[in-house]
Amino acid sequence: MTTIAERQQIKEMLNYPPYASTVVEKQHMKAVLMYGIRKDLKYVWERLKEGTRRFLDMLCAYGAKRGFVYITGKSLAKLCQINERTVNRWIRVLIKSGHIVRVYRRAERSNGKGQPLFSVCASSLF
Image 1 (cartoon, helix red, strand yellow):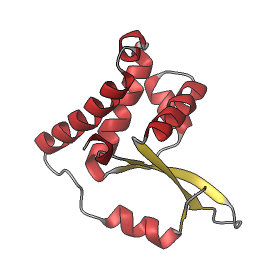
Image 2 (cartoon, rainbow, N blue to C red):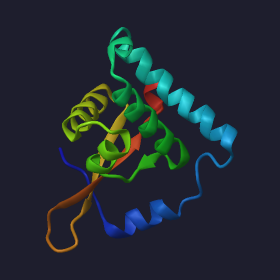
Image 3 (cartoon, rainbow, N blue to C red):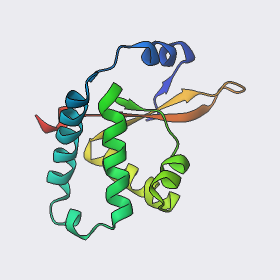
């Protein structure tokens, strides 16, 4: 099932105060998110390439501030110097395991879906 957020909802989300405002709070939240992912991946984490680890780390770091990430897979791939297919594959894995939720924004020029928002979930840990 595809969830679509309206333009006004996204504006409200962007105006929410940050979940973690200090550096220490951001680091703690990022550590909590990374712990959940590493716990689920178990032995796979040790075999991941450095770029994939950097991608997962960056996704948790961006999500620790506001609780959601508003960036395309192409941009994440470029920042982490990995293939876009790798980013998309790991996003699917994280969605299936319940660590992130994908919500699309409504496209401006049509009635379809636009760019995705990824909500990073720490609730799967508890």
